[in-house]
Length: 132
Image 1 (tube, rainbow, N blue to C red):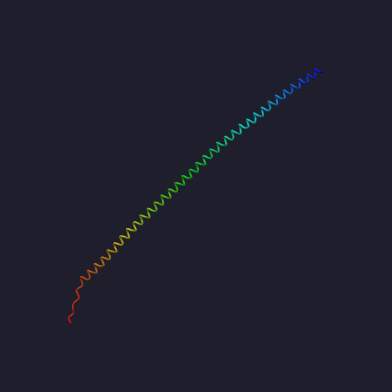
Image 2: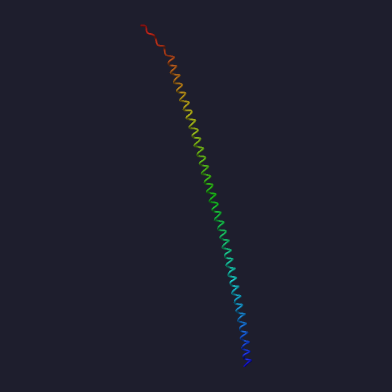
């Protein structure tokens, strides 16, 4: 009986040791699987961050392009406004020149009229004295 009990105890110890080894191996496998899962999640997160950085860079590039186009359009408007102002100034100068020419012509006409009147008076015979 004692041999059977010792044998049973040895078998129980052996089974417990085997169960402990298997449990330890299962726990190690579980830890390894969790670590693998974490590593996969870290890789995915890294890839997502890289994609987000590329998208942010692209968005920044588009914003910069829009700003440059807007600046070019504003510069074109300023250039056009300057050209319009220069044209208006040139037209005003031409009008001022024409006004000056017209004023000179009016002065010439007025002078000519006075000269003609004086000439007409000069060519008229003097009034004759009437004998009374």
